[in-house]
Image (cartoon, rainbow, N blue to C red; front, side, top):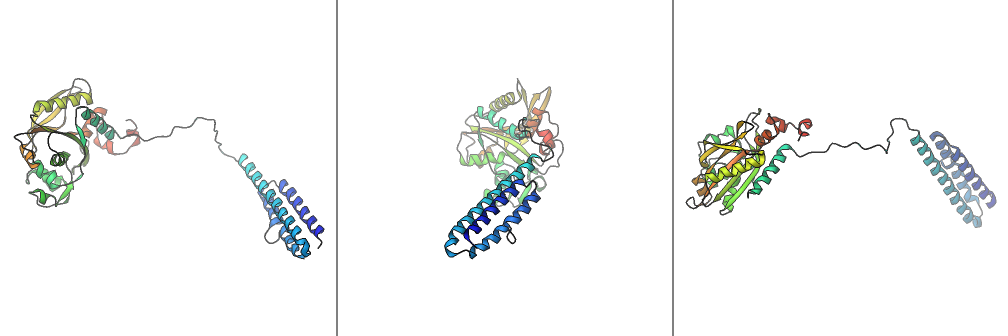
Length: 343
């Protein structure tokens, strides 16, 4: 084959491919043209490429250059036709279309859980009263949960049916108590840990989860939250305890809230009281309080002849429920978005 004839055949093939691909108006027509011109087995370009070997030696260079140019022209025509057909298909697609000019739909976003809101509120109030926030472990040993808090071994609070024990052992000393653990039943354990590490004065609150195997009902749940407060210094007395609780109630509940103490008993305080707030015309119990028992002070190395203190424990859920008018504690843990979105 002569060079001129080979070059003319390449140009004719490129022109024909560009015309047919430009006229292709469907994916089927496009695919038919593609196979016709560049198919791996029967494509016309493949047939012409085989004729390159029949050219004279001195003409193969020019023939090869024109063959590459023809490949590029046909490939460009293929790309343009493919892009045109895809664009047409997108423009004629049926079904709902997105109007970018319309205003967006506000997505539902998460909110802080009402218990977490309450905890942060309590921290802020007690912080203004000079109480530092501390934390402690939720898995405790018997020493910190019972022994150091002056709770005797035969006390009902230590009954295995009233606690989540992770391993029970006899514990009459700190060393023995370290061998048994349970999910803490009160945040009073934190005050022991702080006093073991810090000399007086101590003025702290701790907020966190506590666990008791109660049957869930409107007022009980096996996991709930407490706020424990502790103030130990020289000459701390019950009048200061009542003042702190009244200031707290006025800040949290608003207005001039009345408070009253009813005599009670807790192993780790003496004297012990139940604290009630007069709220919306009703006396509502919020927790226990009292002067720290001298035995508790001795257990952490404090001299009860030199230091006194008071402690109080308030139920976070009870405060939250009272403030927001919630009547069933289980509503706080059902994860019902309709309920939680109210806060």
